[in-house]
View (cartoon, rainbow over the protein chains, first blue to last red):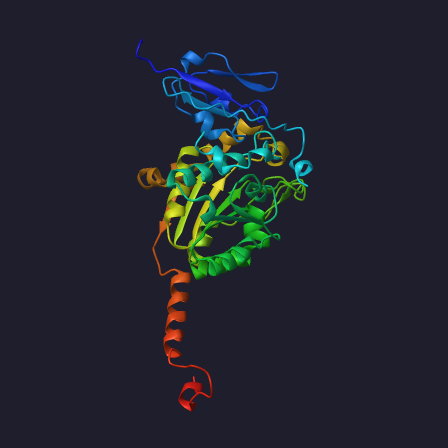
Length: 89
Length: 286
């Protein structure tokens, strides 16, 4: 079991609408909903099948291999509460 | 996933679709196929009409066009003829494609112009509060069919095939991995390619017909489809009344832009020696 791959769940809570699709189709029951947003409750059980990522209609969940080189954090500094029109002149 | 995020206008997300709407899954599948083919952002043009599905190009970071209801294919035909080097993709819905734009659809298929059409079929007009569409199955409810729809549906794939499309496939939001493969195949095919993607509409179709939410609707879609390869070996009673999914038809034919270029070259050859002035009678006669 020591060579078991581990996975990191990148969840964009601002994009998640809590539709429950990823929770229902996770074959290992890794995910759950907390306050209407997806949460990786048991990330060590994840087998990296990426069914949640493929089926998520909101592009809110992403599975990355933990051993892979850490990618630069994509969390932007964009304030989503301001509509894009407002910043355009 | 991180490789597909660059194809999105991230400042526009989250999108306006309802929680559990399958249109996001289909958009994701298309973008994954584009990412797999490593298409240049500036060489892709996404066109859409009106409807829930047609909001998709607004979230994609390509050259995009949001056009009149049902007329996405007409605009796309113009774009393709003006710029044949572009990969033109049409994202349309079942109402947009089969009802309002039905005529454009069959004629684009007849011309076999190199456009990839993704039809997101959620069996209902979602944006205008759930009127029945030409794809609502018989007996199912809609706002305008309170006692059940009495009309028969189109079989969109057979319609496309009969009209002359050269690549026809059907996928679902449930079979997401297969949908990516089908989109990839459709994008690489030269000619008019159609991918009908069955998606769920939990807000109107699911609620009106008491099927349930997004997950129940995905199960419902799964139960009423069967893979075309499996259907070939299954006994007929197991496939009765079910929709086939997978690649349904592929028949490479001469493409419209290529044929058009041939005509242009032929005419240019004819008038090559002509440098103005009065032409001879033999040239005017044709």
